[in-house]
Amino acid sequence: MESTEKAPVGYAHDDDKQALLARLKRVEGQVRGLQRMVEQDTYCVDVLTQISAATRALQAVALGLLEGHLNHCVVDAARQGDPAAKVKEATEAIARLVRS
Image (cartoon, rainbow, N blue to C red; front, side, top):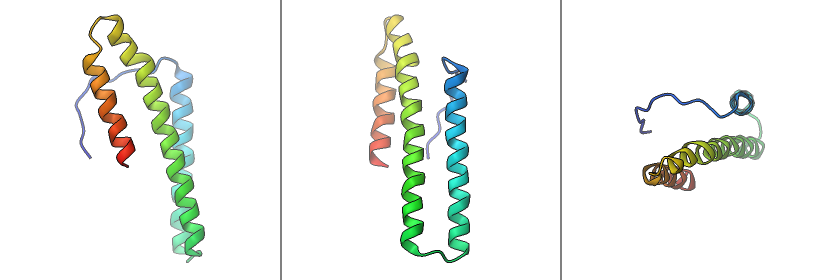
């Protein structure tokens, strides 16, 4: 996983951040549940079903982050007259999401 050194940014509303954190905490619970299921030798198809649910939950977090990035970072860059770098960055992030 590649990491980029960027200055910390805030979210437009603390509510957005809290909603994302709440979703991530639910995903964390789902993953812990998956660990228990494997430890308890739960039927494979049931584990796969829960993996699918956790994957969808992470995708929802990713889409929320992407929406925030487009609505705030890209829009702010457009207002400043040079959105090209932010649009490219968003396009690359979308490409990574599509590949995953």
